Amino acid sequence: MRRESQLVDEFMAHQVGRTFSRWAINLPTERTRLLTDIYDEADHTLYEAKAIAGRSDLRMAVGQLYDYRRHVHVDDLRCSVLLPERPTADLRDLLRDAGLGLAFRERTSFVFEPPTTADRGERLHQ
Image 1 (cartoon, helix red, strand yellow):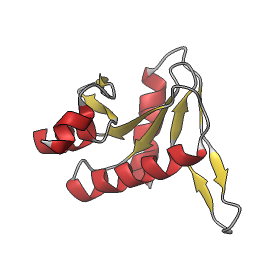
Image 2 (cartoon, one colour; image 1 turned 90 degrees about the vertical axis):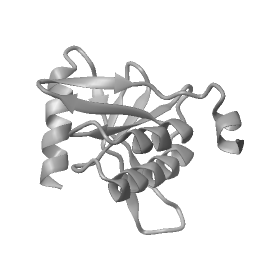
Image 3 (cartoon, one colour; image 1 turned 90 degrees about the horizontal axis):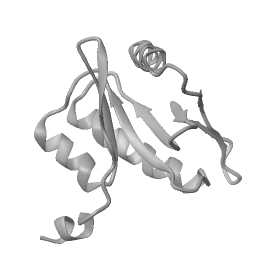
């Protein structure tokens, strides 16, 4: 959690002039509350941060974002994964096929790969 928190803080510090918040999602049938990591209010992007750019962490992030977006009612909501480094090509393909974007640290800044929706269905069914 500490490494994720540091990544989130660093990411927000690099986005000068942006307003960030997070969602606390109360589930009516459960006593659980889901807390999202970062929501960029300007471009309606919900980020799930992970401290490691490995397969199990990315798969967890995909599941979390899918769960969150069912409960976050924002027009044009976009979802992206925030990582400390660029993941492998196969994991980038996983995010692309899931319709999720990616932000990762590269040296002293962050690289953004926005979510894609075009041709997603075709790629999934080939």
